[in-house]
Amino acid sequence: MKLPLAAIGRLVLTTSLLGLPLTGCGDRAELPQKGFVMGLALDEAPEGGIGLTVQIFKPSQNVIGRGKPSKSYINIQSDDESVIEAVRDITIHLGRKAQWSHMRIVLVSESLARKHSVTRLLDFLYRDHEPRLTTHMVITKGEASHYMDTPPYIENSISQQYFLSEQSSHQMTGKSVSTNLLQLALQSRSPSAVAMIPYLYERESLHESAPTVAGAAVLVDGRMKEVIPSKLLEGVQLLDNGYKSGIVEVPCSADPTAEALMKEDSLEVLSAKTSMNVRPAGDHLHLTFRVKATTAVSELVCGQMLTIKEERELRLRIQKSMEQMMSGGMDWLLQKQLDVVGAGNRLFERHTKLWRQWKKEWPQQFARSTYEVHAEVNILTSGTNVGKPVGMRSGES
Image 1 (cartoon, helix red, strand yellow):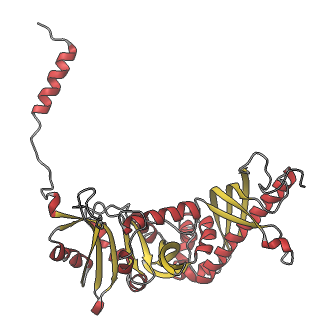
Image 2 (cartoon, helix red, strand yellow; image 1 turned 180 degrees about the horizontal axis):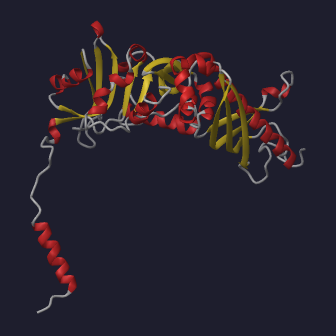
Image 3 (cartoon, helix red, strand yellow; image 1 turned 90 degrees about the vertical axis):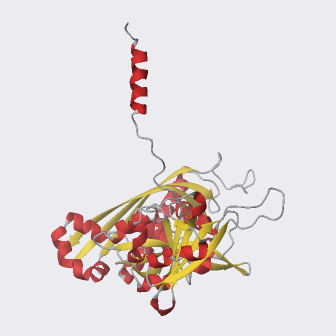
C-alpha cells in the first residue's frame, strides 16, 4: 500500500524528533540563585583598589493593595585590587551569583577614568559571556556610586533612568552622545584611539540637584582627557556625522547693535548628514566638512510672513548658524588637540604612508590642521498652513 506524500513527510519528521537527545538547560543555576545586575558603578577604592557598586533587581514581595511598595532594587558594594575579584565578592554580601545579561548601564568615575584605561577596567565585561556589548556607559563627575543612590523619577530603577536619559539626550537634543561597550572598543582601537562617552553630572535646578546627562568625556588611548560642554558638543557632532536631532537657534539679525539680535527663530533639525574630506596640504592637513540638513520651523518670531523671499533669507541664516556651531566646535578641538572627528582614521585609510610619519605626534599634527565648513539646509515645513507667527493678528503686516 502506498502512503500519501503528506503522511510520509509527517513520519519522517516524527522519526527525526524522536532521534534527538533529551537534554536539559545548560545553565543549571535556578532563578533564586541569581542576582540580576541592572547597573554597575566603578570608583577608586582605598589603597589603590577598585570600588564596585552593583544595582541588583529585587523581586517585589508586596501583595497588591497592602502597604507601600518597596524599591525594586538594592545596591551592593565591594572593593578589591581587581574588578573580577570585587565581582566575586558580591556573593559574600548577596548570597547569590551576579547575573550580567540584563545590565543596562555602566558608570565610571571621572577620577578613575583619568588614572586608568577605561577599556582595561572593563576587560571583565568584554571577556565574560554574560555581559552584552550593547550595554551603555557614562563617565560621572564625582563618585559613580553616589549616582546609584539617587531615587528614580518614574522608572523602576535609576539604572534604567540613566540608560534612557543617555539615549534620549543624544537622539533628541544633540547635547550628549550615546556609547555602548562595542562602540567604545571600536573607537579605542582605531588608529587615532579617540573615543567619546556621555558625561553625567548633578545640575542645580529649583534649589535641588538633579542628575543630568549632557556633554561628553573624551578618551585618548583609553584615558579621559577633557569634557566637551553640551553647547559645543552639538557642533562637534555635526562635524563627525553623529548629530541625530536637536534645536538650532537663529538670531534675527547679524548686526550686533541691532535690537532684533535679542530675538531668535528656533528650528528643529530633523536629519543631518555630514561628509569630511581630508587633504594633505604640505606639512598639515586641510579638512572640508559639508553638512546637508533637513529642518522644520518650531518658533517663528523674526519675520512677519514666511514669504518665498523670507524663507530664502531664513534658510541662509540657518546655514550660517550651523556653520558657526561647527566652527566653534572645531576651534575647540584644535586648541585641545583632540581628533574627535576621526581625521587620523581617514588619513590612515587614504594616505597610510603619511599617517605613519605623523602618528607619533598626531595630537600636535592635528592641531595644525586648517578647515572649512559648508552647510546646506532645507526647510521641510513651517509647522502651520499659513507660515507666519501664530501671535500675529489678521490684517497685520
